[in-house]
Length: 398
Image (cartoon, rainbow, N blue to C red):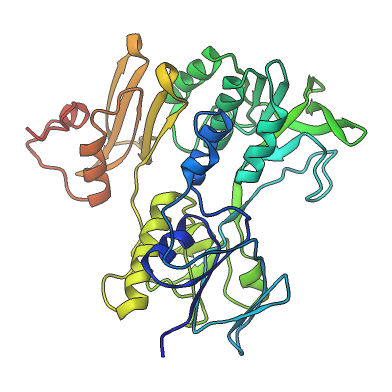
Protein backbone atom coordinates (compact mmCIF):
# COMPACT_ATOMS: atom_id res chain seq x y z
CA UNK A 1 0.00 0.00 0.00
CA UNK A 2 1.39 3.43 -0.94
CA UNK A 3 2.20 6.02 1.70
CA UNK A 4 -0.48 8.70 2.05
CA UNK A 5 1.31 12.06 1.98
CA UNK A 6 -0.77 15.14 2.76
CA UNK A 7 0.63 18.65 2.28
CA UNK A 8 -0.99 21.65 3.94
CA UNK A 9 -0.21 24.82 1.99
CA UNK A 10 0.00 25.58 -1.72
CA UNK A 11 2.81 28.12 -1.71
CA UNK A 12 6.32 27.73 -3.12
CA UNK A 13 7.39 24.88 -0.81
CA UNK A 14 4.16 22.89 -0.89
CA UNK A 15 3.74 23.21 -4.65
CA UNK A 16 7.33 22.14 -5.28
CA UNK A 17 6.86 18.98 -3.24
CA UNK A 18 3.59 18.27 -5.07
CA UNK A 19 5.42 18.61 -8.39
CA UNK A 20 7.87 15.92 -7.28
CA UNK A 21 5.54 13.44 -5.55
CA UNK A 22 1.90 12.29 -5.78
CA UNK A 23 0.42 13.97 -2.70
CA UNK A 24 -2.86 15.39 -1.47
CA UNK A 25 -2.24 19.14 -1.46
CA UNK A 26 -4.65 21.30 0.55
CA UNK A 27 -4.47 24.87 -0.70
CA UNK A 28 -6.34 27.49 1.31
CA UNK A 29 -6.39 30.07 -1.48
CA UNK A 30 -8.90 29.71 -4.34
CA UNK A 31 -6.10 30.13 -6.89
CA UNK A 32 -3.79 27.49 -8.29
CA UNK A 33 -0.25 27.78 -6.81
CA UNK A 34 1.58 30.87 -8.05
CA UNK A 35 4.93 32.62 -7.76
CA UNK A 36 4.54 35.11 -4.92
CA UNK A 37 7.77 36.89 -5.89
CA UNK A 38 6.04 38.23 -9.02
CA UNK A 39 2.99 39.77 -7.31
CA UNK A 40 4.37 43.30 -7.73
CA UNK A 41 4.54 42.72 -11.49
CA UNK A 42 0.89 41.66 -11.50
CA UNK A 43 -0.03 44.75 -9.47
CA UNK A 44 1.87 46.99 -11.90
CA UNK A 45 0.05 45.39 -14.83
CA UNK A 46 3.19 43.88 -16.36
CA UNK A 47 1.88 40.31 -15.96
CA UNK A 48 -1.60 38.81 -15.99
CA UNK A 49 -2.32 36.62 -12.93
CA UNK A 50 -2.18 33.40 -14.96
CA UNK A 51 1.38 34.19 -16.08
CA UNK A 52 2.75 33.72 -12.56
CA UNK A 53 1.23 30.25 -12.08
CA UNK A 54 3.69 27.61 -10.90
CA UNK A 55 4.19 24.37 -12.88
CA UNK A 56 1.36 21.87 -12.49
CA UNK A 57 1.46 19.41 -9.61
CA UNK A 58 1.40 15.61 -9.99
CA UNK A 59 -2.14 15.46 -8.58
CA UNK A 60 -4.86 18.13 -8.68
CA UNK A 61 -4.69 20.64 -5.81
CA UNK A 62 -7.69 20.84 -3.50
CA UNK A 63 -8.26 24.60 -3.71
CA UNK A 64 -10.07 26.71 -1.13
CA UNK A 65 -9.56 24.10 1.58
CA UNK A 66 -8.42 25.37 4.99
CA UNK A 67 -6.94 22.93 7.49
CA UNK A 68 -8.13 23.75 11.01
CA UNK A 69 -6.93 20.88 13.21
CA UNK A 70 -4.47 17.99 13.28
CA UNK A 71 -5.33 14.83 15.18
CA UNK A 72 -1.91 13.28 15.66
CA UNK A 73 -3.25 10.10 17.28
CA UNK A 74 -5.69 9.36 14.45
CA UNK A 75 -3.35 10.89 11.85
CA UNK A 76 -6.03 13.03 10.28
CA UNK A 77 -6.34 16.64 9.22
CA UNK A 78 -9.69 18.31 9.82
CA UNK A 79 -10.70 20.96 7.30
CA UNK A 80 -12.99 23.96 7.73
CA UNK A 81 -15.67 22.27 5.60
CA UNK A 82 -15.82 19.40 8.10
CA UNK A 83 -13.97 16.86 5.96
CA UNK A 84 -11.22 14.67 7.36
CA UNK A 85 -8.08 13.79 5.41
CA UNK A 86 -6.02 10.85 6.63
CA UNK A 87 -2.24 10.76 6.34
CA UNK A 88 0.76 8.55 6.89
CA UNK A 89 3.11 11.51 6.50
CA UNK A 90 1.93 15.11 6.93
CA UNK A 91 3.90 18.06 5.55
CA UNK A 92 3.17 21.52 6.91
CA UNK A 93 3.95 24.19 4.32
CA UNK A 94 1.69 26.81 5.84
CA UNK A 95 3.92 29.75 4.93
CA UNK A 96 3.67 33.06 6.75
CA UNK A 97 1.18 35.76 7.62
CA UNK A 98 1.62 39.49 7.06
CA UNK A 99 2.43 41.47 10.19
CA UNK A 100 -0.35 43.93 10.99
CA UNK A 101 1.18 46.84 12.93
CA UNK A 102 -0.40 48.07 16.20
CA UNK A 103 -2.03 51.22 14.81
CA UNK A 104 -4.99 53.23 16.02
CA UNK A 105 -7.80 52.41 13.65
CA UNK A 106 -6.86 48.76 13.18
CA UNK A 107 -8.91 46.20 15.08
CA UNK A 108 -7.37 42.77 14.85
CA UNK A 109 -7.63 41.34 11.36
CA UNK A 110 -10.55 43.62 10.47
CA UNK A 111 -9.16 46.21 8.05
CA UNK A 112 -10.86 49.42 6.91
CA UNK A 113 -11.84 49.67 3.26
CA UNK A 114 -8.80 50.62 1.17
CA UNK A 115 -6.29 49.02 3.59
CA UNK A 116 -4.58 45.86 2.42
CA UNK A 117 -1.53 43.75 3.20
CA UNK A 118 0.50 42.71 0.16
CA UNK A 119 0.93 38.98 0.55
CA UNK A 120 -1.54 37.10 -1.66
CA UNK A 121 -2.90 37.25 -5.18
CA UNK A 122 -6.25 38.36 -3.73
CA UNK A 123 -4.47 41.28 -1.98
CA UNK A 124 -2.88 42.15 -5.30
CA UNK A 125 -6.12 42.01 -7.27
CA UNK A 126 -7.96 44.06 -4.64
CA UNK A 127 -5.31 46.80 -4.81
CA UNK A 128 -5.35 46.68 -8.59
CA UNK A 129 -9.09 47.38 -8.55
CA UNK A 130 -8.65 50.39 -6.24
CA UNK A 131 -5.73 52.15 -7.87
CA UNK A 132 -6.05 54.55 -10.79
CA UNK A 133 -4.06 57.65 -11.80
CA UNK A 134 -4.09 60.28 -9.09
CA UNK A 135 -5.15 58.01 -6.22
CA UNK A 136 -3.26 58.84 -3.02
CA UNK A 137 -1.54 55.72 -1.69
CA UNK A 138 0.64 55.26 1.40
CA UNK A 139 2.87 52.20 1.74
CA UNK A 140 3.86 51.43 5.34
CA UNK A 141 7.18 49.58 5.42
CA UNK A 142 10.37 50.15 3.44
CA UNK A 143 11.66 46.61 3.14
CA UNK A 144 11.71 44.56 -0.04
CA UNK A 145 7.94 44.13 -0.07
CA UNK A 146 7.22 47.81 0.58
CA UNK A 147 9.64 49.04 -2.08
CA UNK A 148 8.17 46.59 -4.61
CA UNK A 149 4.62 47.68 -3.80
CA UNK A 150 5.49 51.40 -3.99
CA UNK A 151 7.08 50.99 -7.41
CA UNK A 152 4.08 49.03 -8.70
CA UNK A 153 1.59 51.62 -7.43
CA UNK A 154 3.63 54.43 -8.99
CA UNK A 155 3.61 52.55 -12.31
CA UNK A 156 -0.21 52.67 -12.15
CA UNK A 157 -0.13 56.45 -11.77
CA UNK A 158 -0.86 56.65 -8.05
CA UNK A 159 0.59 59.41 -5.88
CA UNK A 160 2.69 57.25 -3.58
CA UNK A 161 4.25 57.94 -0.19
CA UNK A 162 6.55 55.27 1.27
CA UNK A 163 6.85 55.44 5.07
CA UNK A 164 9.77 53.52 6.58
CA UNK A 165 10.32 53.41 10.35
CA UNK A 166 13.99 52.47 10.01
CA UNK A 167 16.88 54.66 8.94
CA UNK A 168 16.97 53.43 5.34
CA UNK A 169 15.23 51.34 2.73
CA UNK A 170 15.76 47.57 2.67
CA UNK A 171 18.09 47.81 5.64
CA UNK A 172 18.13 44.02 6.12
CA UNK A 173 19.67 43.44 2.68
CA UNK A 174 21.55 46.63 1.74
CA UNK A 175 24.33 48.71 3.23
CA UNK A 176 23.92 52.48 3.61
CA UNK A 177 25.34 53.41 0.20
CA UNK A 178 23.28 50.88 -1.75
CA UNK A 179 20.18 51.91 0.18
CA UNK A 180 20.83 55.55 -0.71
CA UNK A 181 21.09 54.65 -4.41
CA UNK A 182 17.87 52.65 -4.14
CA UNK A 183 16.12 55.62 -2.54
CA UNK A 184 17.28 57.89 -5.37
CA UNK A 185 15.90 55.40 -7.87
CA UNK A 186 12.53 55.05 -6.13
CA UNK A 187 12.17 58.83 -5.80
CA UNK A 188 12.99 59.27 -9.48
CA UNK A 189 9.81 57.29 -10.20
CA UNK A 190 7.73 59.83 -8.29
CA UNK A 191 7.53 58.02 -4.94
CA UNK A 192 7.85 60.28 -1.90
CA UNK A 193 10.08 58.48 0.61
CA UNK A 194 10.12 59.15 4.36
CA UNK A 195 12.58 57.25 6.57
CA UNK A 196 12.75 57.29 10.38
CA UNK A 197 9.04 57.84 10.12
CA UNK A 198 6.73 56.07 12.56
CA UNK A 199 3.10 55.60 11.66
CA UNK A 200 0.78 55.79 14.67
CA UNK A 201 -2.74 55.44 13.31
CA UNK A 202 -5.26 55.42 10.49
CA UNK A 203 -8.16 57.78 10.03
CA UNK A 204 -11.33 56.56 8.42
CA UNK A 205 -14.80 57.69 7.45
CA UNK A 206 -17.76 55.36 6.94
CA UNK A 207 -15.45 52.38 7.24
CA UNK A 208 -12.98 53.58 4.58
CA UNK A 209 -9.46 54.88 5.18
CA UNK A 210 -8.95 58.62 4.63
CA UNK A 211 -5.51 59.35 6.10
CA UNK A 212 -2.41 58.00 7.82
CA UNK A 213 -1.29 59.65 11.07
CA UNK A 214 2.42 59.89 11.88
CA UNK A 215 3.85 59.92 15.39
CA UNK A 216 5.12 63.48 14.92
CA UNK A 217 1.55 64.68 14.30
CA UNK A 218 1.82 64.95 10.52
CA UNK A 219 -1.10 63.54 8.54
CA UNK A 220 -0.88 61.96 5.08
CA UNK A 221 -4.10 61.87 3.07
CA UNK A 222 -4.68 58.37 1.74
CA UNK A 223 -7.31 56.54 -0.26
CA UNK A 224 -5.23 53.36 -0.32
CA UNK A 225 -2.88 52.03 2.37
CA UNK A 226 -0.57 49.05 1.86
CA UNK A 227 0.72 47.27 4.96
CA UNK A 228 4.19 45.92 4.12
CA UNK A 229 5.53 45.52 7.65
CA UNK A 230 7.02 42.07 7.26
CA UNK A 231 5.74 38.55 7.82
CA UNK A 232 5.80 35.96 10.59
CA UNK A 233 5.70 32.16 10.28
CA UNK A 234 2.22 30.70 10.29
CA UNK A 235 2.43 28.22 13.14
CA UNK A 236 -1.00 28.11 14.82
CA UNK A 237 -1.95 24.72 13.35
CA UNK A 238 1.31 23.18 14.56
CA UNK A 239 1.19 24.85 17.95
CA UNK A 240 -2.37 23.68 18.61
CA UNK A 241 -1.31 20.15 17.67
CA UNK A 242 1.37 20.26 20.36
CA UNK A 243 4.39 20.38 18.04
CA UNK A 244 7.58 22.16 19.08
CA UNK A 245 7.27 25.78 17.92
CA UNK A 246 9.67 28.65 18.58
CA UNK A 247 9.72 31.42 16.00
CA UNK A 248 8.79 28.78 13.42
CA UNK A 249 7.92 25.09 13.51
CA UNK A 250 11.11 23.41 14.69
CA UNK A 251 12.54 20.82 12.27
CA UNK A 252 15.63 18.62 12.19
CA UNK A 253 17.95 17.75 9.29
CA UNK A 254 15.31 15.37 7.89
CA UNK A 255 12.75 18.20 7.94
CA UNK A 256 10.88 16.40 10.74
CA UNK A 257 9.01 18.17 13.49
CA UNK A 258 8.81 16.86 17.05
CA UNK A 259 6.32 14.31 15.67
CA UNK A 260 8.23 11.90 13.37
CA UNK A 261 5.19 11.55 11.09
CA UNK A 262 4.96 15.31 10.49
CA UNK A 263 7.40 17.44 8.50
CA UNK A 264 7.55 21.19 7.89
CA UNK A 265 9.11 23.15 5.02
CA UNK A 266 9.22 26.70 3.74
CA UNK A 267 8.45 29.96 5.50
CA UNK A 268 6.79 28.27 8.48
CA UNK A 269 9.80 26.08 9.33
CA UNK A 270 12.69 26.82 11.69
CA UNK A 271 15.90 24.86 11.12
CA UNK A 272 18.92 25.27 13.44
CA UNK A 273 17.47 28.53 14.72
CA UNK A 274 16.89 30.00 11.24
CA UNK A 275 13.59 30.95 9.64
CA UNK A 276 14.52 31.89 6.10
CA UNK A 277 11.38 33.33 4.56
CA UNK A 278 12.90 33.11 1.06
CA UNK A 279 12.14 31.10 -2.06
CA UNK A 280 15.51 29.35 -2.43
CA UNK A 281 15.49 27.64 1.00
CA UNK A 282 11.86 26.61 0.45
CA UNK A 283 12.79 24.89 -2.81
CA UNK A 284 15.85 23.26 -1.23
CA UNK A 285 13.80 21.89 1.64
CA UNK A 286 11.05 20.59 -0.66
CA UNK A 287 13.55 18.83 -2.93
CA UNK A 288 15.40 17.19 -0.05
CA UNK A 289 12.15 16.10 1.60
CA UNK A 290 10.90 14.64 -1.69
CA UNK A 291 13.99 12.42 -1.87
CA UNK A 292 13.67 11.38 1.77
CA UNK A 293 9.98 10.52 1.43
CA UNK A 294 10.66 8.48 -1.71
CA UNK A 295 13.59 6.43 -0.51
CA UNK A 296 14.86 7.73 2.83
CA UNK A 297 18.09 8.32 0.93
CA UNK A 298 20.02 11.31 -0.27
CA UNK A 299 21.39 14.33 1.56
CA UNK A 300 19.91 15.78 4.74
CA UNK A 301 19.15 19.47 5.04
CA UNK A 302 22.01 21.46 6.52
CA UNK A 303 20.78 24.96 5.71
CA UNK A 304 20.74 27.18 2.65
CA UNK A 305 23.25 29.86 1.69
CA UNK A 306 21.38 31.64 -1.05
CA UNK A 307 22.04 34.91 -2.79
CA UNK A 308 18.87 37.00 -3.07
CA UNK A 309 18.44 38.45 -6.53
CA UNK A 310 15.55 40.47 -7.88
CA UNK A 311 14.53 43.05 -10.41
CA UNK A 312 12.48 46.00 -9.24
CA UNK A 313 10.17 47.17 -11.98
CA UNK A 314 10.45 46.52 -15.69
CA UNK A 315 11.60 48.06 -18.94
CA UNK A 316 14.07 50.92 -19.11
CA UNK A 317 13.41 51.88 -15.47
CA UNK A 318 14.14 48.43 -14.05
CA UNK A 319 16.71 48.16 -11.28
CA UNK A 320 18.55 44.89 -10.65
CA UNK A 321 19.95 44.11 -7.23
CA UNK A 322 21.51 41.18 -5.44
CA UNK A 323 22.48 40.77 -1.80
CA UNK A 324 23.88 37.99 0.35
CA UNK A 325 25.33 37.40 3.79
CA UNK A 326 26.61 40.23 5.95
CA UNK A 327 27.50 43.30 3.90
CA UNK A 328 28.51 45.27 7.02
CA UNK A 329 32.23 44.93 7.64
CA UNK A 330 33.74 44.17 11.04
CA UNK A 331 37.16 45.35 12.20
CA UNK A 332 39.82 43.38 10.30
CA UNK A 333 37.58 42.52 7.33
CA UNK A 334 38.68 43.28 3.79
CA UNK A 335 36.23 45.33 1.75
CA UNK A 336 36.16 46.12 -1.96
CA UNK A 337 33.70 48.67 -3.36
CA UNK A 338 33.19 49.87 -6.92
CA UNK A 339 30.82 52.72 -7.76
CA UNK A 340 29.77 53.95 -11.19
CA UNK A 341 27.68 57.07 -10.63
CA UNK A 342 26.87 57.48 -14.33
CA UNK A 343 25.05 54.14 -14.36
CA UNK A 344 23.86 54.19 -10.73
CA UNK A 345 25.84 50.99 -10.27
CA UNK A 346 27.37 49.85 -6.99
CA UNK A 347 29.22 46.67 -6.07
CA UNK A 348 30.67 45.67 -2.73
CA UNK A 349 32.02 42.49 -1.16
CA UNK A 350 33.20 41.74 2.37
CA UNK A 351 35.90 39.10 2.94
CA UNK A 352 36.64 37.78 6.44
CA UNK A 353 39.86 35.78 6.59
CA UNK A 354 39.73 33.65 3.45
CA UNK A 355 35.92 33.59 3.14
CA UNK A 356 33.45 35.71 1.25
CA UNK A 357 30.94 36.66 3.97
CA UNK A 358 28.67 39.17 2.28
CA UNK A 359 28.05 41.57 -0.51
CA UNK A 360 25.62 43.74 -2.39
CA UNK A 361 25.30 44.62 -6.06
CA UNK A 362 23.01 47.29 -7.43
CA UNK A 363 22.50 48.17 -11.08
CA UNK A 364 25.31 45.96 -12.44
CA UNK A 365 25.01 42.23 -11.75
CA UNK A 366 27.62 41.02 -14.24
CA UNK A 367 29.70 39.48 -11.43
CA UNK A 368 26.77 37.86 -9.65
CA UNK A 369 27.39 34.33 -10.98
CA UNK A 370 30.92 34.06 -9.62
CA UNK A 371 29.94 35.68 -6.33
CA UNK A 372 27.00 33.31 -5.91
CA UNK A 373 29.26 30.29 -6.42
CA UNK A 374 31.84 31.57 -3.92
CA UNK A 375 29.18 32.42 -1.35
CA UNK A 376 27.00 29.33 -1.66
CA UNK A 377 30.01 27.00 -1.73
CA UNK A 378 31.51 28.61 1.41
CA UNK A 379 34.97 27.65 0.21
CA UNK A 380 38.28 29.35 0.89
CA UNK A 381 39.15 31.98 -1.68
CA UNK A 382 42.36 31.33 -3.63
CA UNK A 383 45.37 33.22 -2.29
CA UNK A 384 46.48 34.34 -5.73
CA UNK A 385 43.18 36.05 -6.67
CA UNK A 386 43.17 39.79 -5.86
CA UNK A 387 40.00 40.87 -4.11
CA UNK A 388 39.20 43.24 -6.94
CA UNK A 389 38.72 40.25 -9.22
CA UNK A 390 35.67 39.27 -7.19
CA UNK A 391 33.88 42.27 -8.64
CA UNK A 392 35.06 42.06 -12.23
CA UNK A 393 32.60 40.87 -14.84
CA UNK A 394 34.06 37.37 -15.01
CA UNK A 395 34.50 37.08 -11.24
CA UNK A 396 38.21 36.36 -11.72
CA UNK A 397 37.51 33.12 -13.55
CA UNK A 398 39.95 33.87 -16.36
